[in-house]
Length: 327
Image (cartoon, rainbow, N blue to C red):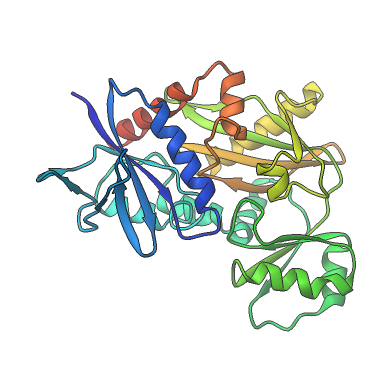
């Protein structure tokens, strides 16, 4: 019997358009012979099932069901394609866990932790994970450019603490540039992380649970045409994404080991994509994405393809893993 799969997409953050693209790819790639797939758009003002003819049907939030032609439909599993809030910050995970509904992403605590860059990096440091030097700033705090310079130096990166797709990120070269960068970041979040610039090869490492086994995918090297791997570089063709990365065997082994170690230490499930920069030959963690982009051009699907895993296989496996976890 076919499984009913809700593909949730959209969200409450600046990443909603990217999420809609990811969700649409999942919908197109899931084998229709095995699944009844439903595109569920989740926004602050509405949760709706959007049919192929673009008609909208409201979602009953009490049990996450929909009604079509008088028939109630419940879902066997939820495929999470929401980047940012509420799909990547633990909110939607907590909701589905309360409903005992299987979903393809990691658990509520893991999602909340990894979405919070400051907390995640702090939690991983005792496990030997190398990171950039950092300085924390909250809305309302006094801004002390000299203290920031002493902590991280210049150039540095000013980042929104809880945001993705490089929204709210600025590379800063001097004290005079700090106020504008901080203002930009505060538009995305009321917490900031300011990090030292790491000059080295940047790589992205996908880790998934594939057929029951934690699997590190082929590594991608990021070569950006811009000053850093910003929104344009990620989504508008201003970068090269080279898979497999041009690393030495030692570098490849070290960053693969680090990414798998992080996945296991944090007890993740589903997809993860960790970003690293090599400094002095050692991989330093930048951040972790637990709902990475899933379009055909996105990094993790590229890595899966290099590993011989098609999009259909990648997405079906995520559903199988979610159902098995909850069986």
